Each structure stands twice: as C-alpha cells, then as structure tokens.
Amino acid sequence: MDTVTFHVPGKPQGKARSKTFHNNGVTRTVTPDRTVLYENLIKDRFLYAAGGFYLERGKPVSLRIVARFLPPNSASKKRKADMLEGRELPLKKPDMDNIVKVVADALNGVAYHDDTQIVFVSAKKCYSAVEGLDVTVEEYRER
Picture 1 (cartoon, rainbow, N blue to C red):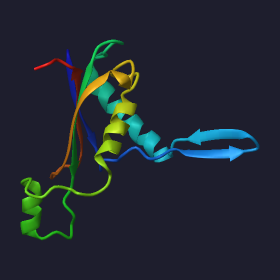
Picture 2: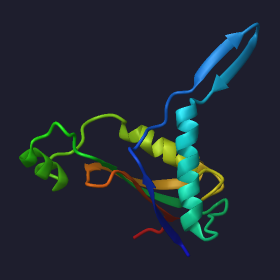
Picture 3: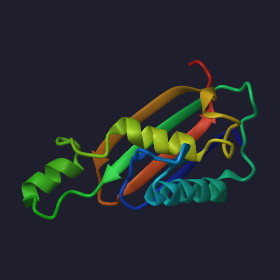
Picture 4: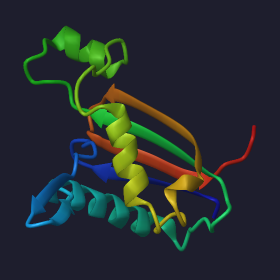
C-alpha cells in the first residue's frame, strides 16, 4: 500500500499556540489539551486506515487535506445551496496553515519518520453536508 486516505470526523481544528511559563528560572512549554486530543484523534484515524503504512526516513511525503465545514444554521436555503455546491467558500477560522500544521504534527513518527519529509501539500477548505477532515498521505512522486 503506497497511499492512505482517511476521514477525521468533527469540526476541523487548527494547531493552537503552545503556552510558555517561566517560574523561578524554569521554563515550561505546554501544548493546549484541545490540540493534544485532536492530534490523537488524527493519529487514531490514520492508524485504523493505515494497515502498516509507514514512509521511512529519506522518502518524500505528499499530504492532501480537505477541511469540510457545515454551513451555518443562520444561512438561507439559497445560500446553503451555494455553499454546498462550492460557489461560496468558508473564509473563517481556523486558518489553513494551522490545519496543515496539526495534521503534519499528528502524523509525525506515525505515518512518516519526520515532518521534514513533507515536500508537497495540497489543502482546501469547503462547505459540506458532513464536516471533518479528509486526509491522504502518500509517497511523493513527480507527475
């Protein structure tokens, strides 16, 4: 198997900023619990779909991400239809770079040796009737 595609259910989340604390000369950095839980969900969904897939050190990685959001309840029927058909895109948080970061960090050491192996990323946000992330991890091949 040279490609793994999986779905992460729920509202897409971005990587939250870690917090740094200084106390009596000791510096501690803590990743927010919400981010840790979301990264673990991504790992679990990958491992369930992977069937032993792993890209060793030195192999280039391609990452494709589609972040799917539900249209807001306050939108009119016409506007919801436009959203679901792709005529209106979600210009809202989380930022796409933070979505990519949370996925790349979650799969670090699980799908590939290190996220420095990622050489190609394709990512988009859209509205959908089912929210979540659709992620594809594969060895990068020049097309």
